[in-house]
Image (cartoon, rainbow, N blue to C red; front, top):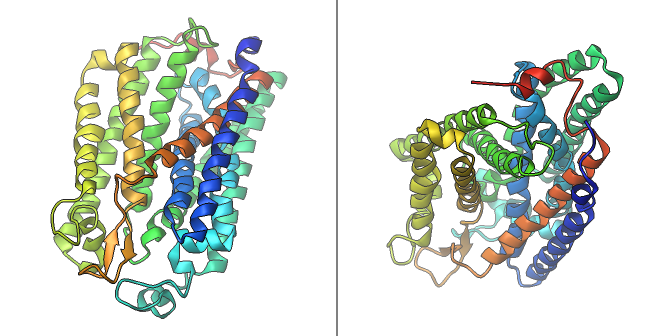
Length: 422
C-alpha cells in the first residue's frame, strides 16, 4: 500500500504552523494574566491541552487493548491511532510542562503550590491543615517529578508501539506482533495508573480540598469517548478520498458505534455514582465541589454552571445514548458522524465543568468568595487553545502518515480487517 498522496501529506506544515501560532497567542494571554493575578488565561492552556491529552490517551488505550485482544476489525483503524498518539508527548511538553515548571504559572493555576495564597476562610495555603495532611502527595518536588514521569512514560510507550508496528511493515516478522502484544499487556495497567495520577494532578488538584477516588475512572471514560468520537470523524474523512476510501465499511462503523454506546453508558455510570455517593454522604468537604457548580454563593440562585451540568446530562449523555441505541445510527455514516460531533463538543463542556469553577477570594462577598463564572470573556481563548493543540496534533498525524504505510499490509489480521463483516 502506497503512502498517502502529496496533496494530503504536504499539509502537515500548514496545520502544525497554524497550531503553533494559535498556541503562541494563548500563551501570550496566559503570561499577561500573571501580572494581573488572573489564573483564567493560563487555565485556557490547561483546558486545551487536556482536551487533546484525553483524546490521545484514549487512542493509546484503544491501540493497546485491540493488540491484547487481537481484534480482527482493528488494524486498518489502529494505524490512524498510531499516527495520532505520536503527538501525545508533544502536547504535554507544549502545554502541561511550562504550566508546571514555570513557578509563576504553577502558583497561579495550582494555588496549593503557593504558600502565601489566601483561602476564603482567611488563612493562607501554608497554614492549611488539609494541605498539610496531604503533603506526602501534594508537595512541589513530587509534583514536578510526577509530571516529568508522565512525559517520559508516554513518550516511551507511544514510541515503542509506533516503532515496532511500522517496522513490521518493512520486515514482515511475526516477532514484532508478539512484541507489540507484550508491550500492550504491560502498558495497559501502567497507563491506567498514570492517567489516574495525571487526572489527580492536573484537574482534581485545582481544588485540592476536594477528592474523589472515582476521578481517574471518570477521566478514562471521558478519554475513550472522545477518542472514539475523533476516530469516527477521522475515518469518515479518510474514507472520502483518503487511504480508507473503499476499505472502511459498514461493519467497522458498527463496531465504533457499539463502543461509543458502551462508553457513553460507562461515563454516565461513573459520573452519576460519584455525584450520588457524595450527595448521600453529605460531607461538607466533598459537597462544596458540586455546590459551587450549582449555586451562586451570593444570591443562592442557580448559577450558569447549573446550565452546563444540565447540558452534560441531556446533551452529553441522553442524546447520544438514545440515538446510539438504534442500529441504523451506528451504520449510517452521516448519523454516526453527527453523534461523534455531539460527543466531542460535550467533552469540552465536561472539561470546563471540572476545571474552571473555583472559589476566588472576595472579602466583600457574604461567603468570602465568588465562583469563576462559565460565561466569562475567556471561552474564546479556551477554544483557541483547543484549536492550537489540535493543529499541532493533526500536523504530526499527517507527517507520520507521509513516512509510514497508511495500511499495515503485513499485519497478521489485515485481511480479516479489510473484509470485516458483522
